[in-house]
Image: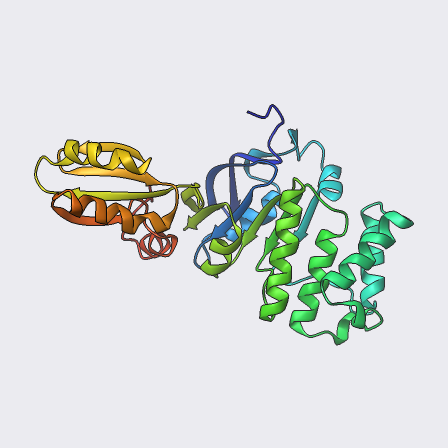
Length: 310
């Protein structure tokens, strides 16, 4: 287990606005390589949470730590170690795209090759090179978003905080963005991605957090490396199933006399699981994923059907 502090940690962080609690006390940690998907309906508290993470807002209570240091005590660390893209990329309209990146890099303390090399690389990677001399005031929504992404990535931050980064991007640009973010995570960055698109979270993120009415209602990994299935059998057949399923090299947990939790190495093995049980003349009454899909968890929380997901 790593002895390094988390890249980013929220310790009972809350925020009040005009006397009203807009974010309940929230505790979260992101390690190097984590890609956290932040979900919630409009008004759930996502943008407030992102601004607290980025040091743009100060918490009313609690503390935010960046690489183990309190961000309130060391605010200059945010400039060096955090890349932040708000929902609407803040650009200087009178600058060209290249000038925008140069100015942003200078504010981050980048000079010479330390600025020019990542700038030119990002211009190419984000398909911005043909726009390098265009004024930011003349850019479309998708183009502005890509410039904002380049600014957030320019100084290769330890923590990358993105609010709806895919806005205005076409499918090719979206895939390029995913590739860039996977590379940053593999290099040790922690990434927070806020989006309304569940497909983006499931395609890219390692964890999902759901906020609702300013409260953290769900925090769970998305990819556990094993497929877990809940098997419902005939009366008192669970122990018999354990013997039968041992040949599948699966992890088996008896929940009660009728239910078995089975963890397979691959999702494709579920057909073999069903055939094995039926072939052993066990009464297979039900077979379902042990954890509900993220879309169902989100809808249950957003609609108020459940107070908190497991």
